[in-house]
Image (cartoon, rainbow, N blue to C red; front, side, top):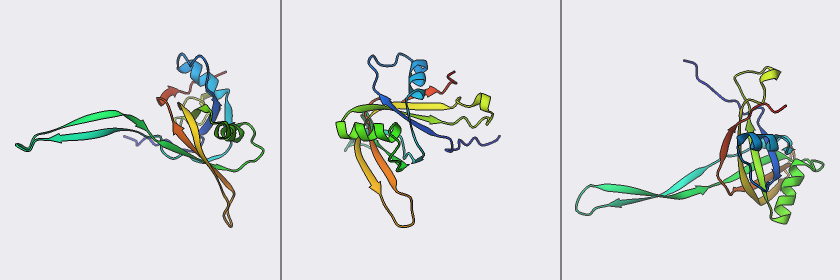
Length: 167
């Protein structure tokens, strides 16, 4: 049996305003996300994390124990980019969300590694969520490109949808 590996090459990041009313299903979400603002040349995305607090209860009189789980906590996502001052769409939307303290929808499209044929591209997976931009940083180092790092606070469920081809 072959080991399936999804390459990160070809991953796209989209940003768009939070819709009102909310998306009704994956088809509506994917269509809107793919029509959103594409963030140019992401370098890294970090981890999309969800965790639950866990409390263990043990008895002094025996070796018995039980665990209770708390609510879901969602982590921060570090979006690393090459700084592009003229990217008014993607990077501009993130800068505006930070400056104005507004929420955005972030869509992350993973590539479909089953085929590299043009007629089948766009059949990967899209993760999307509502996020707030809690931090921005511009990195300037010798012998390196200038980078722009955006810290996104995941503020909703993380929804996974098939990235069906949109005509």
